[in-house]
Length: 132
Figure: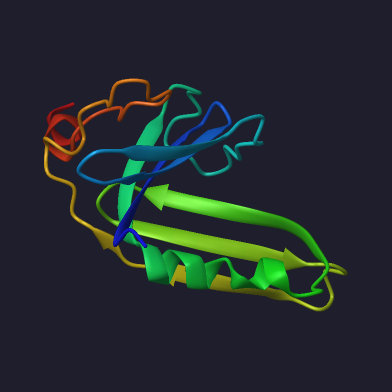
């Protein structure tokens, strides 16, 4: 198993999960996801984010999919080099919800560079964002 997984998401409804090894890179692409723009600083669909998380911790946050829980939606909140939060709403809504926080690893500027063949590249580095 790969120790780290890279998660790249954009507000245009695309999500890429990627693991890297010395001689290979494996990517899984998700598209047509529905972004939520409420309380967002910018509703621009070009906003993108890249995170690096521990594979085991990320897989543990997805174990709920193996159960027979009925869900109405799942929200993935990402802040580059800061956090990954998975919020799942149960169905019916009167049952409640659960939220997972997955710690992220700091991405160096070299890790934030687009990979050949990658559909989504990081929007900006943290330093570039602060300079805007």
